[in-house]
Length: 426
Length: 138
Image (tube, rainbow over all chains, first blue to last red; front, side, top):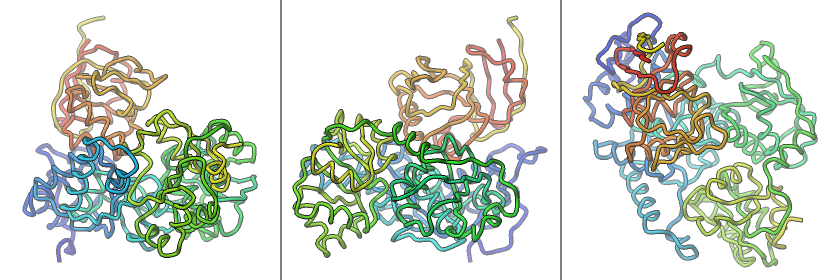
């Protein structure tokens, strides 16, 4: 079986100079991997493995591991399309079928929005390239809920801010914060360099975060996740949280930690699988730092990330894609009402189908809202919202959409829906 | 004092050779916040704000930002001939390493600390990533 053989002490010969100089890491390759690097399995595999060996060499990887799952945060930006097409032209074909991020749903949104020919063309090229490389076009940024759910301890190559931290922390699978392109390379080669969060020693907690605040809703976990200046770098271990935080609360916490700064992992003793208790969370060591987050901190960060209360033009939800429970909450809040502002709820195609079957889609549409699949907030399809003010429950949405000229009042979900009904945040 | 020359060891991340003027950034760089038409850094409050990175040997502490925007930012510069010719970094990350390799921009790290004492904007640098060698002239 490819790659299953004994590891030989072959020096990777990525480039023609001597990697053996003192102090420099050498990635040892199996015979199969060396053959791949030598081009025996085609130019795309060769190039993809070159990238991965160089990344591994840079971060001190001693070997490659077989990955079992890949998620690629494809963006249909030009660089993304360029690299996917480059691999395709070299004959690339994924050894591991990756799931991919949303772009925008061209056929559905063209009915309501004006989309430039250039943007539509790029979207279609991206879809075609990824499909031809062998990706499964799930077009969702929550692969850990459906379609690509890893088990504890599984070795992955995942990209996408909200995904990497969730699968590491909440599931206990293992991935680094991959780039779009490095995870695509992993899909092509089936390998991933062993460094960083694939190794036990880097997964233990380093910062004790005492939460001395009253977390009453899933939204409060968004605010906690934004307190990264106070928490500082490392792997935070949160204590003082309510028992049994919801799946949505854990998604929110991780998403904001990895958006406002670069965190690959957190622990909550008694909740996340690698932290049965506090001692295990720190692997028996002392925390490097102890910080306390209070209600005042949450209040303060909320003021910073949100525009003040005002009239709003639209509501935007689903960054990351809404779970079916969140879709259900929106549907029940708008049932029988008429929205004063545009409302866009982004979710996976599987959730949208379930919402259709169960009547939630109809509730949302009759109120004047739209439930959209395959679509991300950070896409050119939203150009009509440039210069407008919206409301969202996601600080990540507010942060990224700023680059597209949108401003947001950030509130909990129920308040956001209420604002969409009234046309203002009071 | 002009006319001095020194050679330093460094560690190759992305292969290749490049020569050009040094441009030294105190801050981390997000290539998305560089104008692709001119190569000028547009990020507010950045130590390179208003300066062009086009054709320079860019000396900076680290990259930042999500992979889509960072990679696309560098790609847009490259496509218009406004990318840096070479990059010298202190703290590499997966995203920047991957970008430099696929876009074939020489990238090194682990340069002798003495280099950072010397280097100033406008100094002449010759980077040979494959040989792990960086030559400085003022």
